[in-house]
Image (cartoon, rainbow, N blue to C red):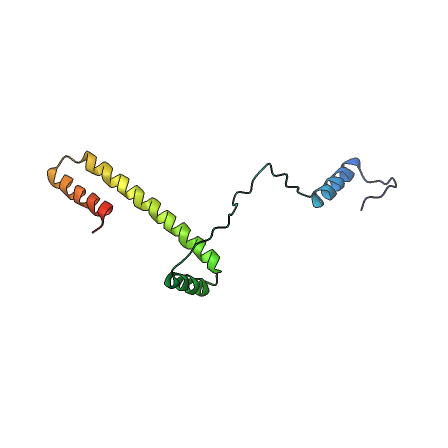
Length: 118
């Protein structure tokens, strides 16, 4: 505690003590200038009954809310789509660079399966 009475405490020690007090009681004020990194929005989604039941069961097993489970499933799906797209572009590049007719046919068939299924 800092008192108004003069003491034998050095100026430096008082300054450190004051800085310590200021740091402990600093209040952050959000001015809106910086937006939060993980801002969320509310999104309404209609799910088929079977899918909703599966989401609830997964959430219950993992001790998550249904909302959190949906977020994780969507994030995983987005990552899977990105990987699939990357694999497609890598395969297309191999197809373009292939010189062997057998290799070209094999890669073309694989590209066709990726695009059209099968």
